[in-house]
Length: 541
Image 1 (cartoon, rainbow, N blue to C red):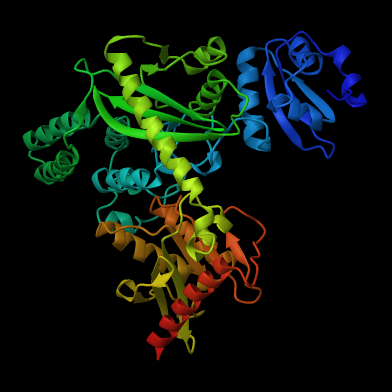
Image 2: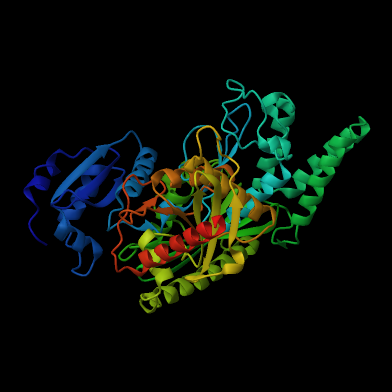
């Protein structure tokens, strides 16, 4: 091994014998690796005193390090949390990484509020709310939220109730999507009871929800409140249609997560089978990269630290195929969930099923990677890659607003599939949110058109696009995103294309992205934008 850099050698004698986190850095200050230790001194010194094999990842790492930073913490549990947070912040190239970790959204129920809301978020906070996820299948998440909106009349407004109260009810109240707790039309106790049913539904307990709804329906009928009884009857019918036959894998009706593991060189896959009430309700999967040189136990530990941190919706048990690294540290962090490593019986059979799924998914993942080069000329693939999307935008929708002589404000929507226009999906609509005194408001118009379009698409249970494109700049994109958030579609990728410099704005990114003028991705965005503009102008003529 090469000599230890002076900046590191000077720090080694002063390392403490306490828990902490260490960061190996390159000459330019880039964080190359983040690790945790029960005792910092022996752990860090092992990197420079051990003769690592020439082919090992640790040897390659130590050939590039130029500096060391250590952070002392009170306990191993604190070190585990800090390590995970630093890995998410710096994305070190030598750490095992959860693939696309930042793209996965959560469903958040703000149960700590007097009048809770159901939101989509990408950040898990210690704020008393309940979090469900992360959802790698965003379509499944949207479906769950649409069901919640349809069956349970959860408020979508942002009022800090009861401190802030509007003067009159919003549109959702008038179209029976909200019962108006803001104006006293629904009591707080009734609203909280409904939120309990939402939580039970998201917990994967539809039988319990149906039992509650049926009981409240009978109470309303006995009190001769037939309008309320009819509302509850309709909600019950929706739930019964959703309660499709599920694979029963545990006759005792237990709640547990079952993890399967598969490995192929530098890549690994962990599959999660979600068993609720004894029924197999869902499958989720996460791919991990940069695992070369790491043991299977270390990779599984990285998954557990990254996937369960801060999530409030947890089962009674988690079944693991083998013991991960730092199990003694992970177990307290996962409580009250029990961690089990079964060797026989029904639980072992469930692990075998999860492992089969993991092997199958990893094979698919590797095949997809092999095909990447073949897609290089596909503008749709290039667009997804350029924007960093988790899913190739095979279906995209583009919005444009046009005004004729300061009035007749029209919104145009065009749909592209596999990079080509699908004219049967084109739509135009007259904008209603126009102030006659001040003329059209571009932002309000965009907000209205996007909201009306997607609300109708949800009501008609039509498929949603993989990407939303807005003709305009940062302001138009923000207005469109507000509309999407109001419909629980905030996780739907959205960008805008500004005409003057052909700048691409992304949600959550302050500076625009500039694509090459020769980029197939930019040409596809321009084609969609120009087609939407042509459709809007043509309507006004």
